Image 1 (cartoon, rainbow, N blue to C red):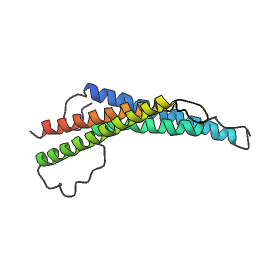
Image 2: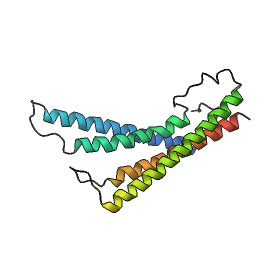
Image 3: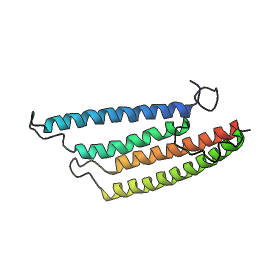
Length: 167
């Protein structure tokens, strides 16, 4: 399948972004299933306690899943952008401006990845765990840090593609 920036086949980073997005989708399907089971167990029909720690799992898995979708969204140029002022510019200029903003986005995501990494290390060192399930808090934070780094890489790749296309 060709990408939006040309007729070339997807690269390894594209394939990896697709795989990560599929993992995020599977995570959300599993999460939705768990929520349905938990709510059903709490209903008057069953009258039992729900899935223990379901809210903790929802919090952690939702954060991870959100980061799973961002690299593919970036590589497919799926992020929202406002082009009101650049619509009439030549394509080369628009590509240059878009590449510049992709680099800014990549730098912001690299900063977020770094700070998430610091937070994961802090949670690890302090031995912080979730309240109900006693799961280590650093694990989802560290996963999000790695995924944020992957988003940054995807943004730099998309900027590079735009610059090559505008030549």
